[in-house]
Image (cartoon, rainbow, N blue to C red; front, side, top):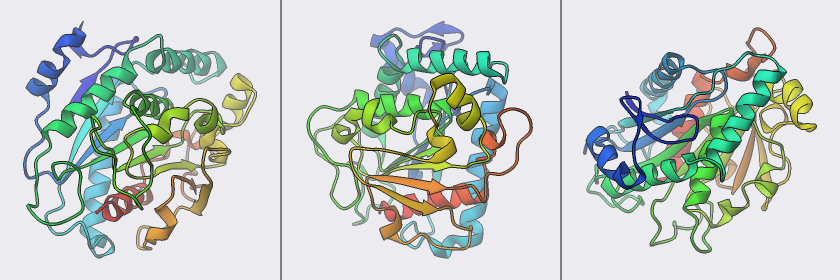
Length: 320
């Protein structure tokens, strides 16, 4: 597993020491080398109450689910081809706390500071994505509609990790561009993201209209897809108590700069039509899938399911 570790302020760590900003590209070049055979780069940022080992296990589990889903139902993704080979990058950050309201608020505030103006994570992950974009090879040497150099780039976040990802993509916003697969990504950007899958996002339902307003100008070629489940008490009860409003992970995307498409999470053997996902914002009801969980957080961490891998693979397939 390829790992990028951040400290509490969002700086990249190397053997426990922060890497100076001017040395980030050298650090990434030494630690992260996307192989030419990889067809898709998947960057995963974990969420609340996830230690380093648990984060590694979650990223491994996601990759295993993707592999298993593709082996069983590869015919659902005809554009991926037989050579489909995902290459994962795990971004770890200090998110562990107690599972109650004080712990929720502490990690919420840390995620906010880490990814907003007080921290460095947005810029650091933005630079990471730019590095990956600059070095992705052409695995197909064919005529598929791909990014600048061929490999496709997908972002996956969970819980507060979704906030960090959104801020990182905003960091790279330069001039007016577009979301959505209906149009090609804007040229001259530091990177272009083909899809962003936000699993049980810990943010207010109006976050895309109030907090992440620059996403419309960011280098996103594919949709922003967010799952939610009424069994998720962390973004339901705790989010409401901490922020006086419901969270995306509990009730879905509310308001956004563009209309929000609402769909249900489908079974692993049921295809997603392109028209279901080809929107700027897609809110996915996973209440029938993300149901298991003990303690105050409920099903907040029940996101690693075959259905999630199916959704990600569908996004990758439609990105071609």
